[in-house]
Length: 90
Image 1 (cartoon, rainbow, N blue to C red):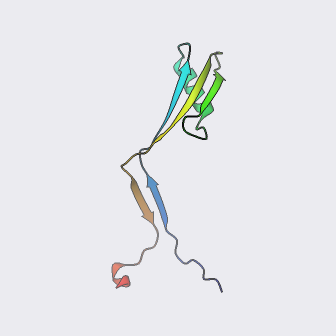
Image 2: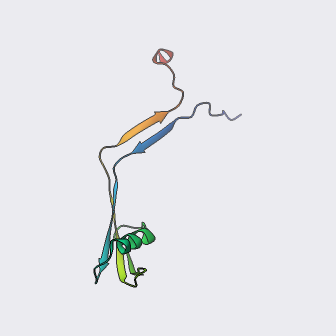
Image 3: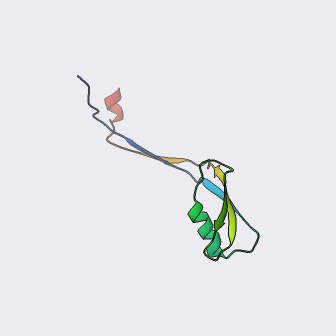
């Protein structure tokens, strides 16, 4: 007979990770065009990968490079659940 799980604990972890993209253009872009290129291309499958010839709504062609993630070192966490009292484990 399989023993059922009786207790479940949820662990959330978060930190200040930074994802970095580079947008390359031969012409000066508006802020909206830069946002459009970044948000439409999104996270590419691997660091250094380049999406070429993305055309903005104003007709400018740009290349968007996903540079990767800089992982934060200030990790915080929270654990939720019904815990045993310290005296219960003695």
